[in-house]
Image 1 (cartoon, helix red, strand yellow):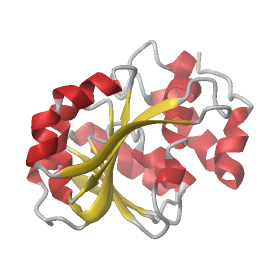
Image 2: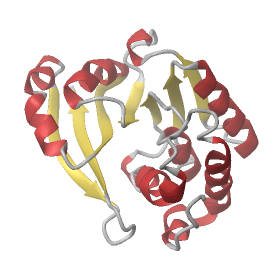
Image 3: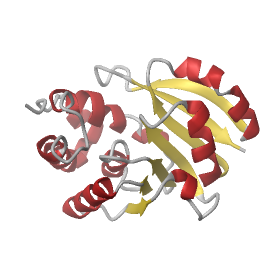
Image 4: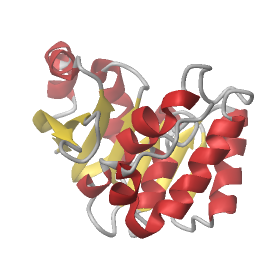
Length: 207
């Protein structure tokens, strides 16, 4: 049983709600069978996954080119592409079946602001060209920094969705933070007063 659409979805997505609804319905119907989400996720798909991703959308600058490392089912990449049509999104995902899903949803939703790259973040060859990079539920910060920071232009930003342990992850990543010359590394909470489970984000400027 897929979670019923919460009232706050209309606040978060505005006039893009119908696209978010279509994506969530498709993921709820096909996600477990196709190995995109686990069996416990459909009853909390909106709250824990879609809205959790979407509330970070205002953090990305207008006109930016942003990457999503390990996009998987499109969380947060496809959700952010729905919420922010003024941002160009590069979804980077190594697994063929997940890449197929991303292409299907891009086409079904008519998302012309999405580029899909099959591969790992470590295999990126275009250099430091992205204005921002995000990731959700990929790995600990200390191992995520070496994968994400090399894709971001000087002055760009890491915007990484994290859980309750975010502050501790920063402490454990001090060596990587120094090595990759990250500045203003901090935890922010977004979506307070908007959704029932606000999202923790680690933000950092890449120098």
